[in-house]
Length: 397
Ligand SMILES: Cc1cc2nc3c(=O)[nH]c(=O)nc-3n(C[C@H](O)[C@H](O)[C@H](O)COP(=O)(O)OP(=O)(O)OC[C@H]3O[C@@H](n4cnc5c(N)ncnc54)[C@H](O)[C@@H]3O)c2cc1C
Image 1 (cartoon, helix red, strand yellow):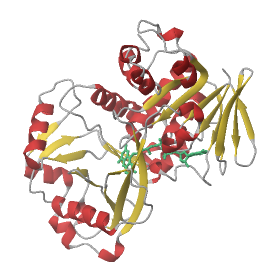
Image 2 (cartoon, protein in one colour; image 1 turned 90 degrees about the vertical axis):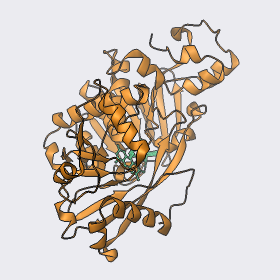
Image 3 (cartoon, rainbow, N blue to C red; image 1 turned 90 degrees about the horizontal axis):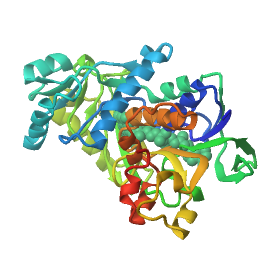
Image 4 (cartoon, rainbow, N blue to C red; image 1 turned 60 degrees about the vertical axis):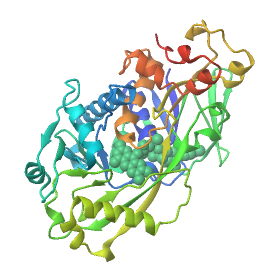
């Protein structure tokens, strides 16, 4: 394989393009906006944080492996300390449920380094007074997603084409063609669909299940108290240290809400979260400095991303395989892949999924185990619908 088209210039598209280019594949990345990372990947700061459940399930495994993968990737990129800061993160133990979760997590030796901090120690790490303690993750931190996306696409084998809205994907002979709104036709051996909530615009993604989840984030100017914040501080929202004089506080979570307007109620929710984390910062807040950004996560029903090769939906429905069919017998769309559905954790899940796809294409060892890779197959929903759950769960066995 020598050429690929990647559709979408957020973290999923940029990290997939990078993983392919690193293997010598020439990539054309198509982005509909005038520049990369203007949608979900466009927040000034994103937290790198593997929040996990008490069960050692697939989402926890992916969070841990993806977190480590993104940290390693950042180390490979030149001058990444300009857009990544491993300042640590405190997850405050608000409420009995969160306290129980933290106790259970602390006793799981398979998880990464976690420390329990009392309010005094938590405040020392955070740089401000805190009334409750919680879990401290020293390796966690923040990244500037826009700069990260640009750094990934600066690879010599990646050619970014902006203001190009991909409309249709077709296979002609042994080659894939992507047509955009300006009647450009791009050709390559491989296409990777990385356009988040819009993947369903392509007929090959008909059976994929994905939901838009609106998120509003607010920013406020640093003040005398807040300027001391030196770690990320989380409740069910997060407060960042100041970057270029502004803190981020967020975010709201509203499935199926497509309203692009700023919501006063959402700003109130974020400010309420700020007051709960630090009444002192809230009291010193300059209300006139508050700014807002709205974007949409792409969420799958099982909270696992969509990463891997697509199956032909029509063929699968017309000729459903027997329960004991082998993955190799399925009607794969050779050369057509998806990297999407990253929910609230794209900075730690999209890069490892990009690596997974590049590894599948180049027949390299996968960055995850086979069971985890199967759980992310973009065609799993159709296989399950056809009663082939076992097969869906063992595509790479
Ligand atoms: C408010 C908010 C806060 C978040 N905070 C965090 C956080 O702290 N940490 C974290 O890890 N994650 C966070 N997330 C989640 C994270 O931002 C996403 O998971 C991630 O950005 C998704 O990346 P993506 O590349 O899949 O999608 P996007 O960044 O949305 O990229 C998709 C791209 O495809 C382009 N596109 C779409 N259709 C076409 C087409 N037909 N042709 C060409 N281009 C097309 C779009 O223009 C866009 O640039 C947050 C999300 C939100 C909304």
